[in-house]
Length: 542
Image 1: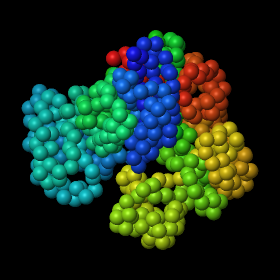
Image 2: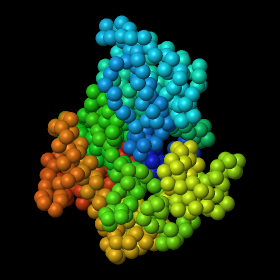
Image 3: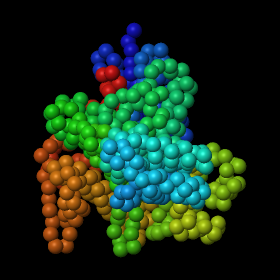
Image 4: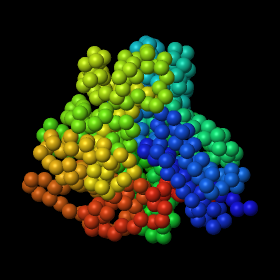
C-alpha cells in the first residue's frame, strides 16, 4: 500500500497542506486555506479535510509534519502573553520588550557559589502589583547554568503568590550571556499559550478527520520533534517556518542561494550553502530579540502581503509592522470611503465570528461592536469613552484574546486594486485605494503602484540587512541600508546569489526585488506551499 506524509504549515494568513508520497518523495497534491486566528483548528481542519477527501484515505497517512510561523509572527508583531521578567544578580541593566524588567540581588559566581543572598523580600513585595498585569513570568539568575538554586527558589515563591506559569532560564539555555538567556526565557513565557493552543488545534483537526498517526513538529534548527515533547519548549518553534522554508529551498538543487519566503505577515530570508541550510549555533535573532535558540541562520521582519499600509501626516506611505486583515478578504465590509482615513482611523475593528455573548456583555468595546457592528477607532472612542493609548492597549489585549480582528489596507489590496490578484473582493480594495489616494492627490492606480513599490523596497531592505549581518556580524552598518536613497546620495547593491522564491505573495513582489538587486530569481514547483513541502521532507528524512 502506498503511504504518505502530510505536511502542514500554519502562517498568520494562510494554512497550507501538501501530500508527499514517501516512496517517491514527490508532492501528489496540495491545498491552501485562510488561517483562522480565533480558532486555528478551523483553518487546519478545512485544509486537511480538502486534502484527505480528494486524494487519500486517513489510514494511508503514515505521519503528519507541522511547521508554523505563528511564533515568529507574534514576536515581530509584538504579540503574545504579557511577561514579567525577574533578573537575579549583579549585572548591567538591560531592557527587553516585556511588561516589567525587575532586577534583584542574588545570583551565583562562575564556580556556582552564591554571590549574594537572593532578595526574596523584594520579589514578594513586587508580585502583588505585577500579578494583574502579566500572564506569565520569566526568571534569569546570574550563572544559574552553574547553580540554579536562586531561580528555583524564585519560581516557587512566585507560584505561592500567583499560580501563573514561570519559566527559568537555566532550563532553556546553557549559555552564560544574561541578555540572550533572559530573552530566551521570556520568549518561552510569551509564546507558550500561543503554542499550546496551536498544538491543541492540530490534535482537534486530526481527530475530526479520523487521522491517527505520529505528529512531528518542525523546530527552528530543522529537526523534527514529537508533539508530546514540544509543549514546554515553545521557543524552539520560533524559526519553525523558516526551517521548513530552508529545507524546501535546499531541495531545489542549488549549492548556494538565498531563500526568500514572502508571507502575509513577514518576510523570512535564509541562506543555502553547499546544498544545505546554514545554521546559527549561537542563537537566532528575530526582530529585536537576541536568543540562545539554535536555528537556521535567518532573518525575519514584518513586511508581507498583509502588512498594514498607513498614509502618514507628511504624505509618506509606510508599511506598519503589524498584520491586518486585507479589505479584500473581509466579508460584509462597510465602504472604506466612509471610514478609512489618517490616524486614528487607519483600520476597522471587527468582532470575531461566533463571539460569546457573555464576553461581549462584560466589555464595553465588545458590547458596542456586538450591537452596532464594525467600527473605526474614532467611533469606538466617542461611543465608549475609551480613546488614545488606552484604546490601543484595550484593542491589543482583545486581539491577543482572539476576540477582535483589525481590517485595513494592505499590499494584497494594492494588488487587487491593480488587477494583479483576484482571490478576494476587488471592489473593497479599490474603494480603499480611492480613499487613501485622495489624501495624497493621486489616482487609485498610482497609489497602488506606490504601495507595491514600497513593499518591494521593504523586502529588498530585509534581504540586504540579512546579508550585511552575515558578512559584518554585529556591525551597525546595516542601519545605512534604510538610507541608501536620499536627497544627497544614493547607493545600489548587486546580490551575487540567486533568489529562490517561496510563498503565495512571492510571485507578485520578488520579480521587482530581483531586478533591484541585479540577480536571478527562481520559483520551484509548489513554491506557493513551500513551507508545507519542507516540513514533509524533514519528517520523511526521519
